[in-house]
Image (cartoon, rainbow, N blue to C red; front, side, top):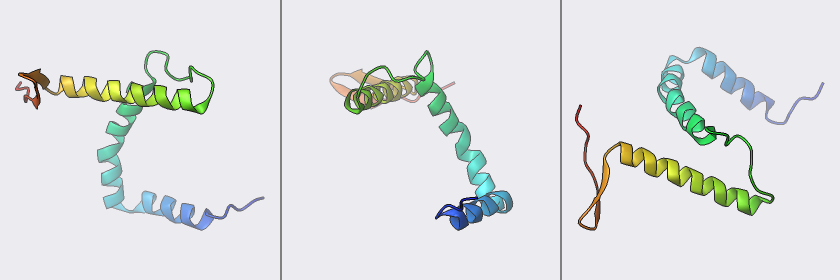
Length: 92
């Protein structure tokens, strides 16, 4: 059996996650947004890398994330009018 160098820190973090109500509230608050962002990132066949080499894949990932962020901003009301980018709140 191998004990990793950070075993005590990991055990303490697991204990905090299991017992601290404030930590659990924060986790429940932020987890859905993170999961959603990851789901958007890997949607439509983007679970695998497309290129050889880290530089090309790094560039692809940055472009993919930028495109998703732009799409999200447009859905939230980002508009380009009179040469200026503005966020127009969408009212329901």
